[in-house]
Length: 347
Image (tube, rainbow, N blue to C red):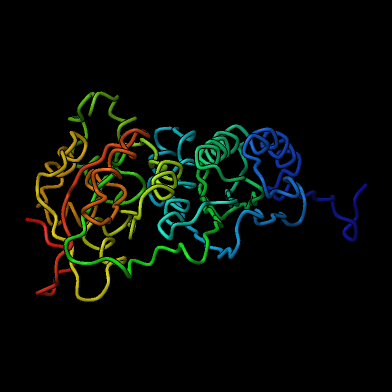
């Protein structure tokens, strides 16, 4: 019999946090993380902190860090029950940013937060994270799963990712050597990647009931949710062979706002309209949203996910290396002296 002074006991599970489910998820994650192990990892998942030793082949290593999320693309993952690729997006958004400094991604940590933990959903998400790490050559060495009742609607979660890479101090890409006459190469994106999804979702609302069955040869939903392309291995291979001067990861702000971030003062990128193809996906988004080319290039990657700036004499050889590795490469413009307020001119 329970008295007023000794009420019925409450467990953490009664409060909405299932420790057993969390333990089950960790066991599901361990073999996924194990596949991402690489030189430098000193301890696996399970400790209070992850240990990593910078590989001894670096003489003057500079650490480069990056963090990002997946944004409102997650809303479609919830609605369409497509959880297996958003983890790749999470990794790509950070490792591609680290790559822009010329750095090799070394290790990655993730943060998964939800109101009530669904082990199958979380395992699918983390499986994507592990796959992204494998494809990038970086180790998934830790993370956090937070079950917080009342913080998130049922069936929803949030993601954040954190990457650390390394680059030789003498090989940091700053863009300082970029000069007029250099070529601007564009590497094709795999789709929308993980930016602009607030507008994508508005397009879906506007076109409700009139959605195309396919785009670019893929089922419509797959085309929309195609994960962000991981450029790491192919671009690192090109960096080892060619004197690339600057890289720009085309994320939020599109071509118009990301390319200027790697240009020296007094220079501008002149891009040739039509020098790369517009895919069915981006044509559909533009037509559905009813926006002009300027807004397309400022909101989306519009078909170019990574930009490479290189001396004109090296452009053909660098392009050949990247194509041989599997990239679609387009010469999309040149660097010129900046003579107006626009750091990127598309004409």
